[in-house]
Image (cartoon, rainbow, N blue to C red; front, side, top):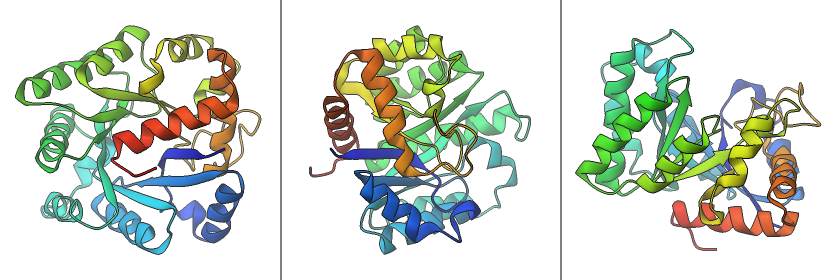
Length: 259
């Protein structure tokens, strides 16, 4: 079986002493591809370097909404330049967050718009962070769709079934991380059942959100995406092999990769 971890912060300090072994364990678990996702200009530069070093790693470049207030005057220019680097297959992570109060909301909206426009200009999918602001996200996606086609993914999805359905209609995929495996996540698992076969993805969001039965383990790592796949296969009534093949094919399609 082949798995594709579509969202991992592989540049995080938690991996500095163990990164080679983390990637080796992922390979042994069948995780053949890892998308390392940037959260700042420096982080984006780091994941581009990791993608150049490890054959199984690809990169996404962007400034996560909670870090936008810290961005220096030339950081966005750096992200735009990095979007042209080899093995960069996506823009982000971007999006909106009303849970944390690290960045004024209008600044988050400005950067979200920049990322979407860069995605459209470069024909690269964008990666969306959503927390406590589903309607705000949908409103901006609707406006962006009026300009042209959208391609992207709602990462570590925790929104509603209706929100997921509209995101899919707008051209996006829906990705699930470890939270879908948690005992009290019945509502999220119910949402996962509604996602069409050709739009569902899996991820770890490592080093965060370790899935059951490894919940509480820090750091989470790409090898553990298999547990999320097991959960989704069970609730969707398919074999693990089928779920692995499906989500890997979907990821390859979204990120325009050869299988």
